[in-house]
Image (tube, rainbow, N blue to C red; front, side, top):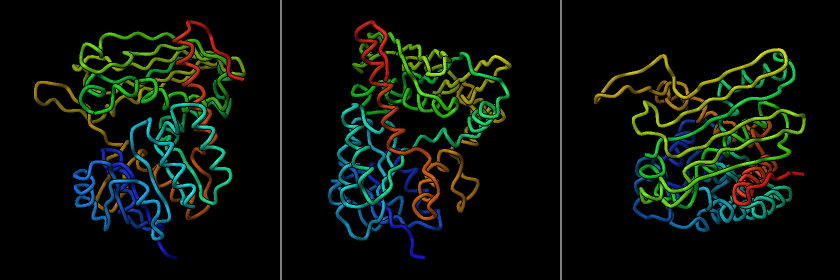
Length: 341
């Protein structure tokens, strides 16, 4: 069988993850990389061994020798690239969120329904071993009916101020809350029916990044469960991990607690600081291994295209995710609860 020929748009950290996956998976061939920064595109081409490099996604999606396009660009840039790739008949993998407005997400979902190619959203926590077990326990009724819980996914201020060049054009809600809202839908097998949210600004603006410091939300689900959710970008840089990730589900017969913030079995003290090293999320076990669940979700896209396996998350999951996040923003702006029909 001929290999799936792939082009990657976005030459940052996550685009490099895509390129690595397509270089290792036996079913795929990395054909091209693309970034609006020509130097970054060339560097990624050299690092990945891709034959071609472009500075505009239209050049990449127009190629007849590319079957699939994967998108690892900033949150607010996905729509035009996804639509162009679908129109060109390509299979598409997009990083989350699908789009940052409901109108754009709905436009993509409609286009995906009509397109010959498949569209998957890379909600990689759906294959995180911690959360697949949590989902199975809930689905099996081990804790009875979920009643309430809490979800926290936050970063130290290093992420918006140093890691992301575009932090001021996003927020912890879109960058991190997109993971959490999808994860709650996945674990509970339920839909959000109402949100209430508050936010504050000031701390990040003083650091030169003009966006919200955090969002705190209450999410009500259609079957009655109530969850609090926090997404912050102002955690102290003294934290041993730049991520703080916790999820607890309380049912009427039991509860489940998850803390995948770090892989506590491996830690080191260097440069006067306690650090936790990744060993299940992304680190490959050898040059011919794809790695942990972060890269496994990219492999699931290939499984869907090549072997017709179910999509990990489709365009309508992406639309539902964007609807929730947009409702949270609207609630924070108005000070009122927002219902989702």
